[in-house]
Length: 114
Image 1 (cartoon, rainbow, N blue to C red):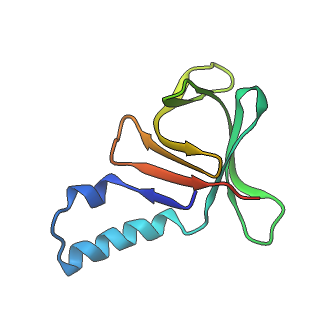
Image 2 (cartoon, helix red, strand yellow):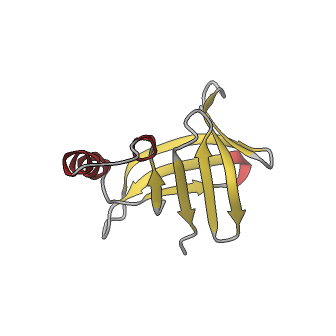
Image 3 (cartoon, helix red, strand yellow):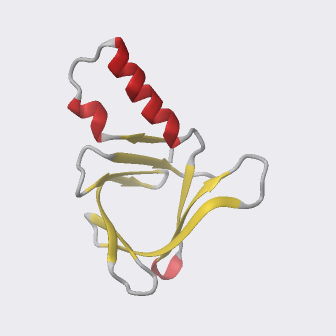
């Protein structure tokens, strides 16, 4: 993931210095380490945070996924229930832009890494 927007920024039309400082603090809590989303064969996926110069990933989470052409569903591996639903804004060979269906102002942008 190269960029993620959140709902706080959209709700605040005008920001003073204190409000902007609060928003910046909230962004810094999320961390600057990019997340990696791997969509594998057989509708299996993995989301993790890569640590630079380390072979192991941090905060790795496995899931199943389903893509119906317009929406991307993340499913729990055991129960096969929907964990999250995303609307696919753009899907091309080198990038993916998705918006959370329950929070339309939350958008994630992914680019292919080689």
